Length: 163
Length: 154
Image (cartoon, rainbow over the protein chains, first blue to last red):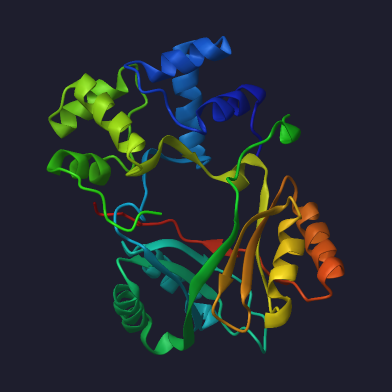
């Protein structure tokens, strides 16, 4: 998927957030030497293509009391995996949901769903809900709780990839 | 990380719950969004600034699909012997391609994400980590992503 030079400049100018001023897109446009209409139009086009996924707030779920998270993993029949993944991904408690390859024999799971809750009991309750949703299509499952964050750096678009 | 949940009033919660997506692309987007929330333009702007200040929200703005911008990502895992864990973590984290890394309770006890500019660099980084640590790096690239109904209810 190609991103034009101006798209990339707009992404760089907004990836840490929108200005909290009445006309934020005009302010970004001014900083880039563009027209407000071009910034709005390009963001709308990027949103239509899925490059912009959403525009809004990122709640800090730790600060809001959702301090427990578990990576729930499921071995579901391949033929059902896409349909079931979509159903699991649509749950409010699931923040990320992916199909990934198995690594047999150590790792039989192909569906990954990150589940959040106020505590581990709540995560387990939600995990049981997912198990019920998957039913017989699920052959095995596990949940991996994080013990320690070993490294966390923001994912940032860098100049290196600029075109 | 906070131990105590923040004290938020009904308006704060409404902003967090209703403004997780759909912020307008228009000349006066705060005024437009504020109307839907029953607030004034300046009132919404002030609240968003305050929510960011106290850490109830981490960011306000557009969220980009990093892969769509040309980057490549891959979840990886390793089974690290307990006695070597911290030494291996230091070796893995020293690679700039490692974006985040978590210790998790499982035989596969180290889980990290590789982020690079191109897909080819993912494989090179995984091989470099295997060479550095003498341990296998299991690759779990996403085959399909489901996106997504996650709502944090404040």
